[in-house]
Image (cartoon, rainbow, N blue to C red; front, side):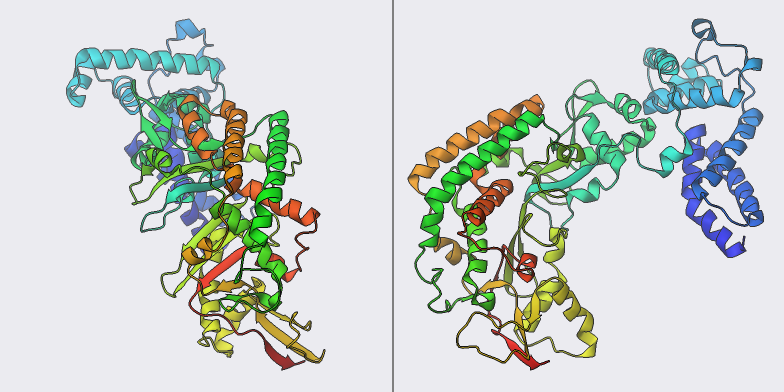
Length: 574
């Protein structure tokens, strides 16, 4: 192998090799010595190798071999003294691989708390007496003796019942048996840094830590043993989660997760939830939608003239109605103001945010092929105030969208570019090719040979027509909301009934400390994403809404509140 390639591999694996060494030795000095030996031997071996199929396995095999030799050199004492061999009935050392026994012992030591691990190492490996350890740690002699007794018992129990052992692969790959969060969202607002929940839970082992202590409070050692990671490693992550408000310290050195986790329900419950949503979606379609569609000018769907404050692509009022339905149901169908109740559950984060953190487990999407679920994401609303240009973007991403891009992507560069294009500040020149391509790819700008539905715009078929493919209004968002019909009184009582029924079905799937939050989060069910998706679907089946064109599926249910409207069309010869 070429030296440059070997150098790169060693550089990439330095941290992983040190992680392996520290997990085996639990001592910084020994870990540095072991890591140095592994690195040296691995580098020599790489230079001699021609081609390696599995680099992880190759480095791991070398690490294990060097570690076995290291153990024989470094450990001259009796490895069984920690365990108490008379109780375990262990075979004589001549009949068992010495490094395997030591590896198991070290694995169990890794599950101890920091103080217990330190006492074990000082007593059995440094050969210090308990009174000396007490002086060094500034602890009462009785406390040290108690920790030593508890640590010995935990190692014994784990050695008997916990046969699996940590390997290098555990550190190179996600936590065993992961419970990945398929969605992470918030109810509240991010801090000035816009640090999302996914920043703190980017790794599956961090998600596993949170899930482990969600239904029942546990101490750090219990969590570490459950997810098969060293206590020291888990403890650092837990402290970070506590510091940022995602976990909470309780009595008896236990911690409990303080996020809202939604996971798999029984199929029968899913069916009941779906039928409940359908039942009330029909009621909303029968009672509220007629009010919405009879909204007086300028939001009237009758195509007599273009509303002066609203730009409708291709003057297609069906496209406008799709956005009106989802937007109105979201902002007009609340039956109770629960902001004060939600406020009680919002956590002030270290980064300045204040919100309820919500996660959905992957298993939640492995039930029936339910019409209510739209893998791989849940319907979601976002609203973004642009800090550079004077526009606000609202969008509702659901199964009717052609693409499933992450919603944060929509609020960025391409909308700023669209605004520059609308105001004539984005020229069609070579330096802007990538910018225009992105807007075309996202469907914000469309070029077609089909003429828009406007009798005043007649062109020959040979002409290409380019237009902005987005509902845009110069009305302020508040003015737009006020122009929509309020929720009828008869729907308010029906909506509260809907909320109660939904809570009764869902509350059994949440721990006691999250049931009240479950009740509050299931208020205003008329406004939820899954429900509005069913309303749109029902209106489509009733032929009140017409099917979307392909290019409309890219930008449906998005409204841009701006100070300018785009030009209607641009024409050019083919």
